[in-house]
Amino acid sequence: MSESIFLSINTVKWHLRKIYNKLQVRSRMEAVNEAKKQGLIE
Image 1 (tube, rainbow, N blue to C red):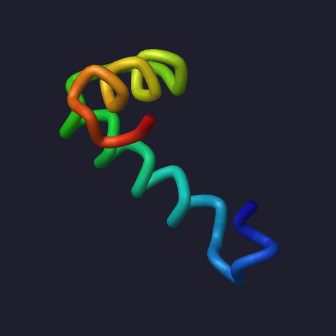
Image 2: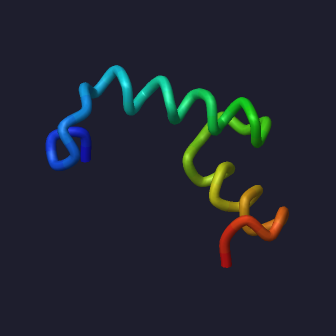
């Protein structure tokens, strides 16, 4: 993903950590489930 949008892998990881912290989750699956629960995604 990072290569296709010209970001470093560390930048992508930093943003993912920020998203996980805001959703109070620790994994991608938890993030998806929590985002669905909050109505952020369908």
